[in-house]
Length: 302
Image 1 (cartoon, rainbow, N blue to C red):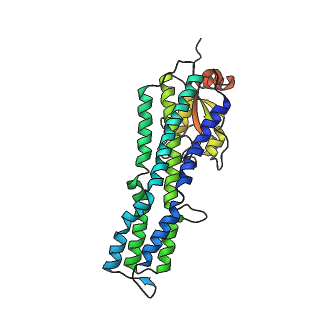
Image 2: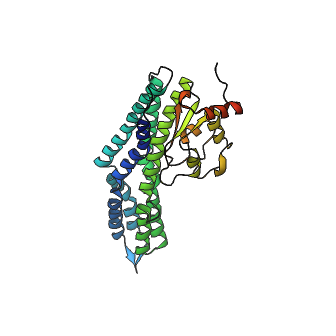
Image 3: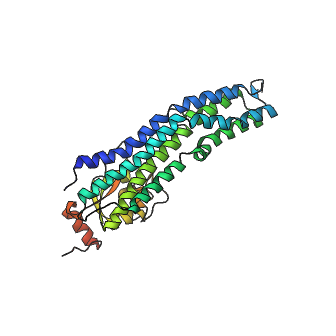
């Protein structure tokens, strides 16, 4: 049975829609955090409009960590995170369905694929837990407050800096949303690609479709490759900086850990919403096969 193009498009669309829904679900946390911090700063002792260095002020700053964590990690966040992590399993099910329909080799999911999925889910949770948020948001707020007290910074400048850390501006996301966006989009897409590539390796597949259309702000690297077929060796070469085309190397947005092996996981790089999708040779255009033969990457089977 051939795979319907609409099915592939829907699966690829989830690389954007699933993380996007998770990010949207927690955007309401920013004003809550900003309100809490403004309330905290208003209790600090000042002199002539400047925050003063005092034991009282230091004690107030030290007490804010737990309150912020209580705001972030409430019931709503836990529910949203649980739903997001559950989508990893749904994506794996879609990939299983894809291989069962597209592969020339009989495909049955194994415990290896299940364990790989669990690792991806665990990694995502670790990047979205209290420790991760402490580094991404709470630590910068703490540093800004400490600096304000020790340097006698003005009350208004302190609030402005804190609001920027928390909410960003019209050009830059606040630290919370910036962290969640990066982790959500990258972890979900990388999990999807790692899952499909592991199966492709098991099945001995060596042809791929750089799948996905032109999304908003598509990088040059992906724009050159979208909806085109490639041999495995060609893709490995990109990871080693070979045959990368007109976009240069390293290309804009490339993950620094990209090499001939990890290119199948990272694809175009950070926030990439394309798939390097394994395909049967039956779906590969003849000119692509001929290109791989000419390069010595593929020997046709008689």
